[in-house]
Length: 329
Ligand code: ATP
Image 1: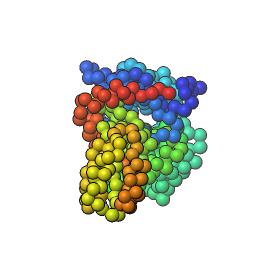
Image 2: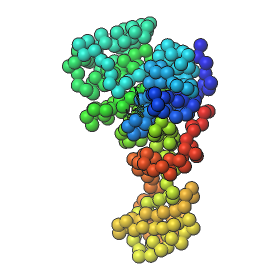
Image 3: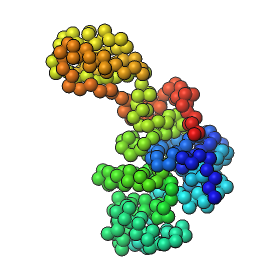
Image 4: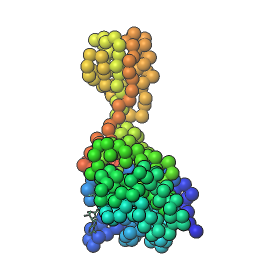
């Protein structure tokens, strides 16, 4: 029986530490992943992503702390964990001389799946490789091999999928296909994917967790991370009728810190944090007859956030204090 601390949590990590000899690779990691989430695990080289994934998949014990997957403790019930988790390692160990169907049959048997043929058919259909069933894996392109890798991870219908750098080495078209596939799989599975690729996170994940030196430095939706990291809000305004006094007029609105004219008809307005001034700006534009063509908030890109978090000591310390230990709901 699964012992679930919270029915909504597919993964719960509490005070997880890992030492490799003297090296402290994971430092009191705390986070949860709710059922149905696609969590992006982002961090520079050596941050601890693979270590965390290996612990979650039961391939390596933690030095201290605990992790539960689908309610099972990774240290105490590692066989149950493996039954409920699908793992795509960075380098998938595929048997190149086997056909796709034979390899997946072999994997399904390893997992003691009841109806092996049905499981193989289902996995091939989900990753869209049914037409390659009888081809040897050696003959497949890298993108198709990656699909076989994902098929082996889902063959036993696990609740949770862990994907380590799922699009690494793929060409742009294959990357789009694999991302679409991950999003589709996210409808039925809880997913953690690790990546260095920032657009991958914004395009695929519902939440992002940034890890650095074995610690969580930020955790939020990709969109909210951008605004949280800012010291002020920025609003983009485009007007139909430009006028010389637009900048000085806008600066009269309470909370507007600065106005920068970008081109003839566009302005970037900096305002104090947490006060949306768009209504006042729109009202002024109507009164003055400028005509609003566009009025939208401008957020830091995830790339900018990532760079800030992984390069600036000060901001990292601030965020860890404020938000580092994930809420263990
Ligand atoms: P990358 O993006 O480069 O794959 P990562 O975020 O996955 O990095 P890990 O592979 O988890 O990082 O490594 C975290 C830290 O632990 C690094 O400092 C790494 O050198 C160290 N480490 C990882 N595996 C071992 C090992 N088997 N023995 C000793 N140290 C290790």
